[in-house]
Image (cartoon, rainbow, N blue to C red):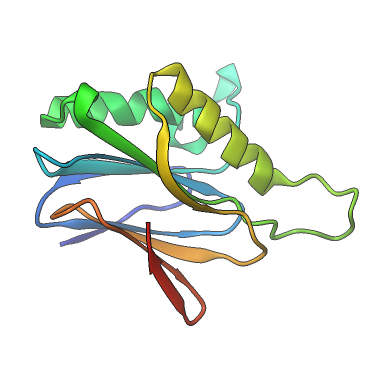
Length: 154
């Protein structure tokens, strides 16, 4: 089964399923326990939450990371065995050189939030100026990135 994660949402699952999302300036925060074959993906839209929006923890890097961790541990993942990967953060709205690069801010915030919980990013496919499709295979933790005709694994 393929679980499709929408903007601002979080998806978790077990092998043999996969989790997929489509990204622009948003970032996918991916965590995977290779031994248990359990993983998840948060599709964050913005770096920092506002207290008034506590109903959407997957929308922000600062709330998505703890929520994703909690859901994975409840599913049986071992926190100390999780591998972190990130993808996305494209500069999709570059009208001029002075414009705010939301993608870059999302990348930085994702890395910072993972670091706060003791996880470092093992691999990434971030930045650029085009969107990408991200697929996490829960069989092996492989993350496939599709950008136009280009396909790669991280």
